Image (tube, rainbow, N blue to C red; front, side, top):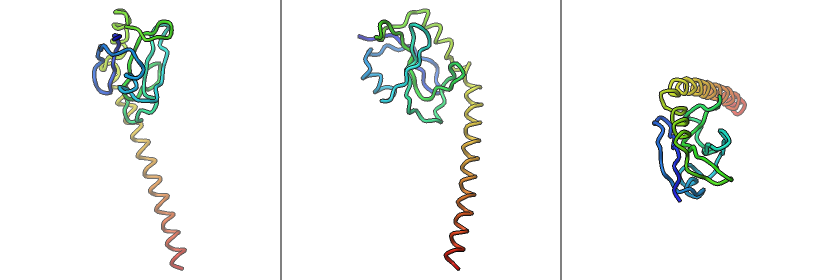
Length: 138
């Protein structure tokens, strides 16, 4: 059975898709370690828990979602097709235009912090190597 859902990929617009409604297919699409985030009573975000930290995708309730994720509907703990109003709601919620500036800002801050840590590590290694060379030379 195929279900209607939304596919949200980094740096791409939201897509309405029909996919097989089984976990095996979703794992092959997103990744093995699934993270389920309840958006409301009837909808769920399914994302990869092990997505790369530099694959910034969208913001949801103040949290950054990484990598590709799906927005699906559930009923009685089973995946079902999304209703038109839910598709419209989440399509508008995850539009790329709404998230691009914020995600770019977070990405810049993340990279700035990452490179700062890398410079610190190089400096510590350089000092450690000097001490090691001086000990062995004496």
